[in-house]
Image (cartoon, rainbow over all chains, first blue to last red):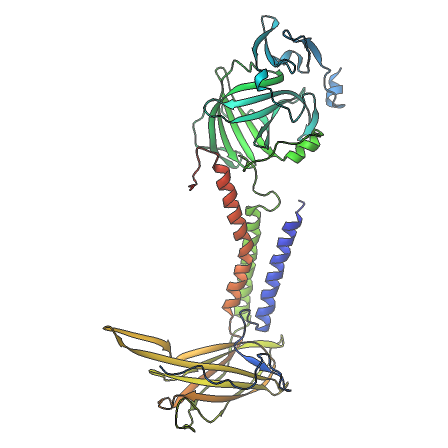
Length: 60
Length: 436
């Protein structure tokens, strides 16, 4: 049975999403983001700041 | 002409002709003796064969309608070569709805019909394997398909052109239409017979090619009675494939849960150092945390850090620094707990938790040293905390996100399919949908 191009595109999309899931599960990557900030040895940071920013917790 | 010519060479019998008794216009007769009624294309008169002669019955010229497919046009539908021999403009007896029918003829396969309403075309052929008695069922089964009652009506002929094997002006028929898109079953009940026809949706552009139509096709309006939602990308097909993909996702998640079990890297309790400052939230002396090694075959794995602190109407926080001794990369994060409770308005309330956790995504392999920087209020009585470090913790959020990504296309197609069906059934007296 000849499939339409949009159907093939849908199959490719499903395959891509499942492959992405396998990759994230195998490498421990969380899709929703990360709770850490990363700093390079030379001081560059992924979060745009350096050092600990202080506690978010304050008493009422 | 021989049977060989008809079967093998697909030659249709040559037409005979007679002269319209009203306007003397020569009318060709392709179906020869099978023609019982004739509509003159010149004067619009309908003639009927009775008492061995053509008798003029009624003039319908005032309703003359331009034909999309001319009488005499030939085309192959379902591998059968048909010739258009007649055209009828019908109208419902109890509503001002009109539709058009083209009578098709093949000397071997008999009659078939092309019906057009609001630009939607249906190809009809007679069925012989359904009970020949009037039905009042709300649905019927034919083959494996359930056909649902869509419409009941009676019709009258407004205009006719060409030749017909039945007395078009005498018979008043009742029709019952059952649909299972792209198919339809129609039962026609007249005074002297009951018959069934099966219709199948056919695209206008397909008909244009079949009959080499050069003029414009009737403009399409709304959703046809048996117009399929999408032949190329139907909801059923999308739902089936999407369901399989969701099943594969579930199997993958189970496999990862089985073969990628979480490992406890550290479980330690720590004493909170004494405050160095006298006022406000205080930063305490940093203490050395756990050390651990990550050695995942894929080069990285996730980490979960879970904190317990005995807070009560209080808060406690940790600044955590992880240092990968292999790459010298430093990872900073915050983890804190807070818990409050009390009475207000005669009711006991509480909020927060004494435990909290964070997830670190895709931490590269290596040996890690951890530095803990505790924070607490100056008056806080928290003097100890406990920290767990785990690797390869199941990421259920990933599963739900990917599940949503897999379901989004079937969901969109379902919404479109639902809207399509609702529009279709808007033209029916037997719709189960509600309309505003």
